[in-house]
Length: 102
Image 1 (cartoon, rainbow, N blue to C red):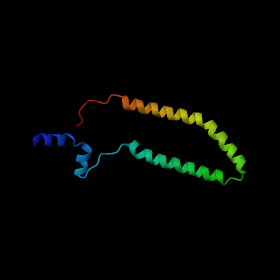
Image 2 (spheres, rainbow, N blue to C red):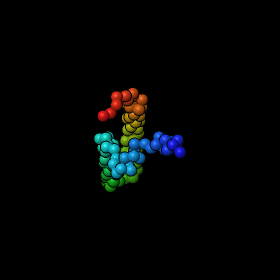
Image 3 (cartoon, one colour):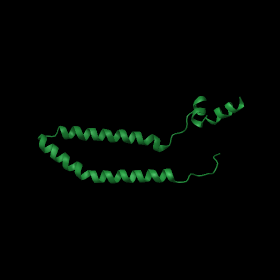
Image 4 (spheres, rainbow, N blue to C red):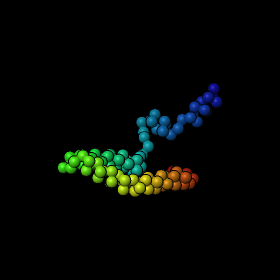
């Protein structure tokens, strides 16, 4: 009986305990800012797309210009993604402080 209770307590993590008492952990600035920045970026892309589609150009001219812009931006985007992945790997692999929290 006590073994099953002990195992149940081991499986009980901090998130579940805080949820039971009606609390939640404090979110970091990054956790709050990233969704806002992402929605802002999507809004910009939608606005640019609408602007390009309503521009006074023929379809073939617009497609040609878009193709050129995407081809010139692709290497920059790949570099930015690679840099972000590398930074994320460094953060994940960095040793955490072993000092107790008070």
